[in-house]
Amino acid sequence: MNSNQVSLAALFTEARTQNGWQKKPVSDSQLRQIYELMKWGPTSANCSPARLIFVRGNESKEKLLNCMIPGNLEKTREAPVVAIIGMDMAFYEKLPSLFPHTDARSWFVGNQDLIEATAFRNSSLQGAYLMLAARALGLDCGPMSGFDPQKLNDSFFAGTTTKVNFVCGLGYGDPSKVFPRSPRLAFDDACSIL
Image (tube, rainbow, N blue to C red; front, side, top):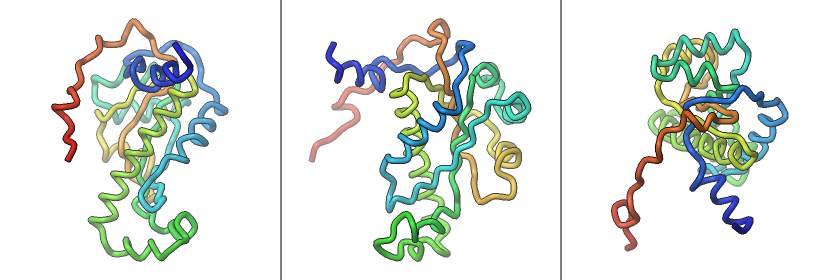
């Protein structure tokens, strides 16, 4: 296997959603490396609405467990780190420095529908970049959407303009807890070329 095939396998074809974790720590340095890679992924007008909380400590983990649905409790508890991917609903306030080419801030002020759609779409993209960055650095990921968003927002984002998008376990996966590979749609079932 050449280096290109190895990279594609690590990022896509051999990477799996994790349901259990080895008891190996993830360092602050690794979390910083993940962010330093993911921040370069494109977002519309460079809006970069994602805000991340890396949950690792016992007290913070307990607070997070209180927000998760029963089916996600064990994998949340076992994950060395759980990233909360939030979306800053006031992301446009940073556009004068992030996108100085034009007055992009004015596109959003007072347009709540556009704010919400842009924050959700682009923080989702950034969450995907986070997972690719983690995989590129040798970590595994377990994205989850089974949680109580109001409870999570109250617990982690109270008093801010940020709301949760999704959460993602990070660490070294336990291969014995990975489900068999599920099928994917064929090109002709999912794509058109016009």
